[in-house]
Image: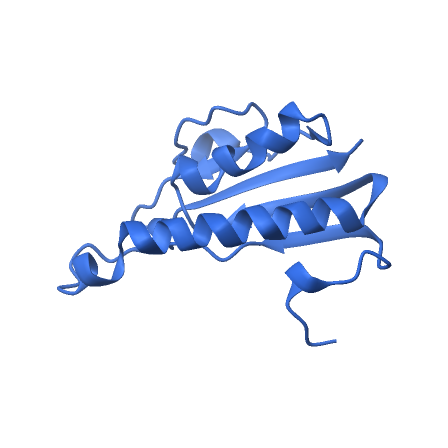
Length: 137
């Protein structure tokens, strides 16, 4: 089915969802790009946040209770990651499922405000990204 996920009918329900949300791409930026200031803007971040909130809200609605989903972005900005999840955690609609990765201490991690989530810093080996595993209550 080719459809904007934000407009899926609530009739649908899923056991698992991977929400790789559209984002600003802040974890993949080329700082040597001469057009960076033109393409990476506050407007882009705000547009991404609006889409992310709507997509996550829909995903939680159509995820079956007790089932899990993964939320990810290629952004390292709190506004596109933890700030998107926080309202749903406060409403008790979802709970975190801590991500456990063998040898996680070898990854270049950025600090996160939600325990159990992972934010990888961009470096010569990795592009930056954020990932969280959620369970619907």
